[in-house]
Image (tube, rainbow, N blue to C red):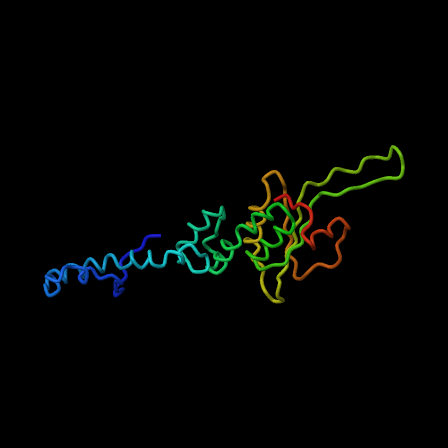
Amino acid sequence: MSRASVPGLPSRYPIGELLPALYADDDLAQRFTAGLDTVLAPVLSTLDNLPAYVDPALAPADFLPWLASWVGMDLDPAWPVELRRAVVARAVELHRRRGTRRGLVERLRLCCGVGAEVRDGGGATWSATPGAALPPPPSGELLVRVWPVRAGDAVDERRVRDVVAASCPVHLGHRVEVLTGPPGDFDDPGAAGAADGSGQSGG
């Protein structure tokens, strides 16, 4: 985040013009203060534009990791700068939905440009027969299916797996399947909530 001298950047507040009139025609004083202006011009420019430095859409690219630390987001340096800006800008929204299917689906769409279907092991069962056997325990595995939003686009599987791993607690296993297109009807009724974001994804 360091800011060095910017060649040719003029100072909006030249020191030489602020000196007493006695030094207005003093060549040594004017040249000396001009050197100070060169050093101070980037500092003054930064202060004049300080609101832009804390705006994710306008901040210099090397400020984004600093802004991300303010809102508790981890940015992958390999991501395009536009994606890093969008993730920082939507950090509060993503945190609010963290741990839900909708939150994971939106994060995958934002960070990876993919559609997603999330299925967890939760569910309910019932029996009309007294004393019936208990249902098997849930698998405890989170299944995430992803596919490209636009036909012909490639899915960055490594990025998808990184996002899913970062969104899931360590005690919850997960599996990622990469599809060529949106899946058909859900195999089980309990997965219908993946379409509207209801339920928990375990993230």
